[in-house]
Amino acid sequence: MSTIVPQPALVEPDTSASFPISSSTRIYTDAGSTAAGDVGNYLAEIMRPSTDYPLPVMPSTTAPAGGIALLLSGADPSVGATGYQLDVTASRVTIRAQQPEGLFAGVQTLRQLLPAQIEAKDTRQASWTVPGGHVVDHPRFAYRGAMLDVARHFFTVEQVKRHIDNLALYKINYLHLHLTDDQGWRIAIDGWPNLSTVGGSTSVGDGPGGYYTQADYQQIVAHATARYVTIVPEIDMPGHVHAALASYPELNCDGKPRAPYTGTDVGFSSLCLGRPITQTFVDDVIRQIAALTPGPYISIGGDEAHQTKPSEYATFMNWAQQTVAKYGKAAFGWHQITGASLQPSTMVQYWGDSSTHVATASAAANGTGLIMSPAKRAYLDQKYDSRTVIGLSWAAEIDVRSAYDWDPATYLSGAPASSVRGIEAPLWSESITTSQDIDYLTFPRLPAYAELGWSPSSTHDFTRFSRSLAAQGPRWDALGIRYYHSSQIPWSTASSSTGPQGPVPSGIEGKCLDVLGANHADGTPVVLYDCNGTPAQHWAIGNDGTLRAFGKCLDVTAGATTNGAKLQLYTCNGTPAQQWRWNPGQGAGILNPVSRRCIDDPAATNANRTQIQIHDCNGTRAQIWRLP
Image (tube, rainbow, N blue to C red):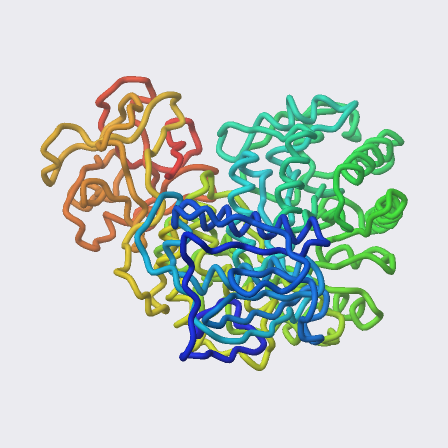
């Protein structure tokens, strides 16, 4: 019981007892609660594939003599509405809570007490034994969140649902979905079809876009609700709206259409706040999003509205908050919303890169609730270190200790601790396109934020946490989570040197980065070739900044740094010629950080076997590549 993440409020191990799960084990749930039965079925569905046990779920009106019991009575009063009590003896496992949400939290702790292979989707051989002991647990903050940006790159319903499942394991209970931005509009709005067909058609680096139908969005909400995760949808305004402006010219002050945008700049777009159609548009969007969202919040963004006059911004954001309230929700906003008059129910999300922000601290002192997401500590899109291939670094390089060693309640100078409602870790998606990418930047940092949000501050200790985190590695392996093997963590399994794996498609449709030939000797050319799924097109992102295939590294021939230098496969040697980074300046390029040149198709054609080179970064289609 020493490696539970987040650390419980009270843990009392009992080494003299343990409970063996067998083919005869049953799961009993409170007979008076359908929701408790649902939690029992959720637990059974996790455990059945790996154990190959039937694990029937049965309602019970009394505490059963054996098995696993999920009961809504008898919990220690300190657990409150969302905590739980867990007791493991030789005869049974009992989780008690006051509400089903507490039972669900207790189930996450039970999962971590079982061998990591319990998470596998196929039958495994293991001793399915739960160690004995007593746990009483409850959260420090009511809001423990993560954010996923689906606007800059789109992620499917199934990808979002998978991410929700991984968040729930660590008792994260809010998922903030950044649904709209300059590069894409991701939610269908009745009466405004171009938002989907035009605004939803693009993403960073000219990649494929996408959008959610309202039925899709409801699927995400339902999946999250079943895991006690509340969705917070964000419709950013009045800036970060280029996708909307490209969809409807009448939202522009000059009434002229805008071309879609696929770069990574910010702060250049604004709704035309003086036009009546703007309020009609915003009202329609908020009304429909509110009707689709059972949670209490709708985020109206409010950040980086550099093209909006401050007086117009304040007037508009005052109205937008009132509109959210009109449809029965409370407004969420990034901390720039403090430039308006805040409604009593408005929640402010602080993302600044400083521990000082007078306007936000003043609002907090006057009763406004804060969610803490300081970029230098909590931004999941920031690199782990200077060698991380994907991610950004404008705020900081954030390894696990930096993610863990701060206190949300005291971080912002002048803000009362009582104003802090919780923590959120945002993942912006400029540099990520796959579920592997999401995993790689999320884990192992997400559990650090989960512990900051859940565990008592008195338990905060990085040495203890690092040991607990190391024990999660085999569990992530079983779940198929490709995580970053931070050198700060004493992993209990052999450290992997690679992150996301797969093909590296070109911006030229149907072409991939390919190792030419079959011998893979040093000096083998790296070329453009029809994507075919063969091992010659299987690349892995190295934790050391490399791109690897066949155990060797992508290399600039002879270490050259000039235009036209060819790429080859070569034994990994740690030289600058083998270093690669996602290039934020060009949307989807791959940059050699020493030469400052990008991977380039010299012919810019569909010709197979064209040897790839480096060249001055220019953002052309010949330099668009999508990392695994």
